[in-house]
Image (cartoon, rainbow, N blue to C red; front, side, top):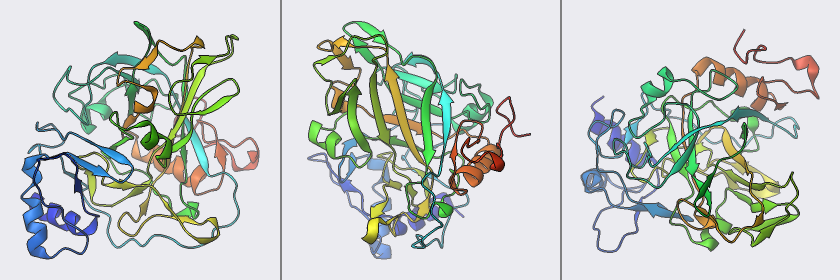
Length: 369
């Protein structure tokens, strides 16, 4: 199928992109738009406006072609797309947990962002990269797969990055391996599928306000240290005990449109689950494909006086992160099937110590046997 035709099909299936920058003209295509309207919207791809979603402030779209986006229009299409999916409304067997952990250490820092500014080294604020050791401005799906990783599971060559944290002029990296949860964000955990090859997205925005960060669906309890919780900017002080770290958890959207691996705002192809009656969560109809919900759980070794603590992107409420899928497909499928769809609480080997009879997914080297 020609690339433009795939783009038109995708635009018929996901919700309208809303222009947020004053003075930039464009046409938003909605799921119910006519063919003529959709064609007009497709013609605006090259305009590279700034787009946003409710609760997610806009980010400037890249205007540069990259290895995964040769025409530089910001749209990367899934090949093949996932169509004909209806969000599950079934009630699964009770399972309090349906998750596994990835454990990945920081690798390097750089003012690069291969999602927002592909092929443009030095254009971003400084980021701290975890997982894949090769991630830089020129990173592509293929380069991730050819790279190395600091994740315990060699099959996880994904790129994970976030704005670097500073205490005054000193850059503070998270200490040791960090926990990245992969869990079900929908009630029917059996409907969760592995990530498609090449999927990428941004969670939150460096331009969000304090209220927007507080109300972002993925914000768990804001910044935490000691007994201080629900701080939506850095707290003024943290206990100075040796075991007190600055912590943050932030969950990603986990419902996919099935069509795009990326969109110009790096968000519109993804959505958070929607709440229904009796605490039931399901994917919205325009993003029907349930994927694992990533939750960053980061810990920085900083405490005491926090007055000089800042992010490379600004205040504490500017925190956001990027994900670029580099998992070995067989490894990810095995972990999702055994742990998420199996209703288990798994460690990085895919082992649930509360259900030892289920066994692990990975061997002692964190690889498929």
